[in-house]
Length: 397
Ligand code: CTP
Image (tube, rainbow, N blue to C red; front, side):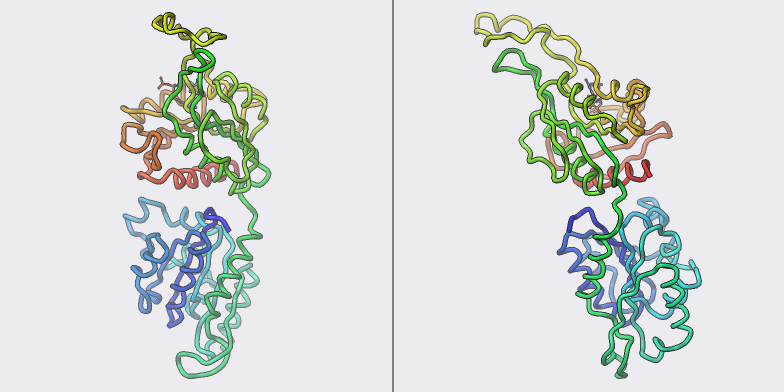
C-alpha cells in the first residue's frame, strides 16, 4: 500500500474512540496518510493531541476555524482523501448523517464529500437494535455508505450483544479493501514530465550544466503514477532511481529533451520541471580541447524553449501545461511574466534563494495561474509533488 493513499478519519463519541488510536497506528504503519477529525463527543474520550501525534497530521475539530480554513477549507478537506472513515460512528452521528444534518465539521464533511464513506458503528446493544437506528443505518447503506461491524460481545456498559465496535484490525482490512478498489483519479491519463538538468557538450569530456538534482521532477512523476496516470518522464542526467510506475526516457541535451517530449505526445498534461540549460556551446568539439585552446571563449547559442514549444497552441497541445520557475527575487511577478511569455497554464515558482531548496529535500513554492498566486508552506519535495498531482487530477477531472 502506498503513501499516496489517504483517509479522512472522523472519530465520533463513545468509549470505542480509544480504539481509533490503534486504527490510526495501523494505517500509518501501512503508509496510508490519515487526517483526523474529532467530534465534540469524540473529544470526551480521546484527545486531539493523541490523534495528531499518531497520525502525524493536525486533528481538525471546529467547522469554522479561521486558521484551519485558511490552510484548507472544509469542502476541499472533504475531498482531499481517498476514503472517509467514521470510527466510532455513534447512534447520534449515524442519525445526523442519515438525515443530512451539517451542524459540525464531521457532518458537514460527510455531506460535502465525493468519496466513499465507511462507518464502524459503536453503541449499546439496545440502541443498535432500536428501530430508529435500524432505519438510519438502512438509509445510509441505501445511500452507498459502507458499514463494518459492529461485533457481538460484552460491552463497556456490561450488557451483551451486537453494538461493540469492530476491532481496529478488521476496520483496517475493510479500509485496505476499499482503497484498493477505489478508482484512481488519473487512470487513463497520460502525463509528460521533464526533470533534471541538461548537459550541453563543449567537447567529448566537458559540458555546461546546472545544480538541478531532478528530485522534484522525479517525485512529481511518482506522485502522478500513484494516482493512476501513465507517466512519461524525460530526464536529464541525474543519479536517481527511476520512479515506480513511470516510463523513463533518458536524454542529455536540451535538443534531445525537446525531441523526446515531442515524441511522447499526445498527453493530457505536461509538467516541465527540468532545469533546461538556456544556452549551449555553438559547436561541440569532436576531440578533447587542449589546454592551449581552452583559454579561448566558449561561444554560446540559445537552446529551444521546451515549455514554450509544448505549450504552443496546436492539436498536440496538452490540455494542461505546467511550468516551473526557479527564482531568487520578485517570485510572483517573474512567474506571472513567464506564464504569459511561455503560454502555459500554471507556473510553479520556487524560491531557490532559500537554503536547501536547490538540490535539497524541501521546496518553497507559489502556484501562479492567470487568476493569481497561491503560496504553499515550505514542504518536502515529495509533499509538493503529492499536492500538485492531486491538483492536476482535479483540473483534468
Ligand atoms: N524551460 C524549458 N526550456 C528552456 C528553458 C526553460 O522548457 N530552454 C522551462 C523549464 O523547464 C521551466 C520553465 O521553462 O518549466 C522556466 O524555467 P526557468 O529557468 O525559470 O526560466 P527561463 O525561461 O530559463 O528564464 P530565466 O532563466 O531568464 O529566469
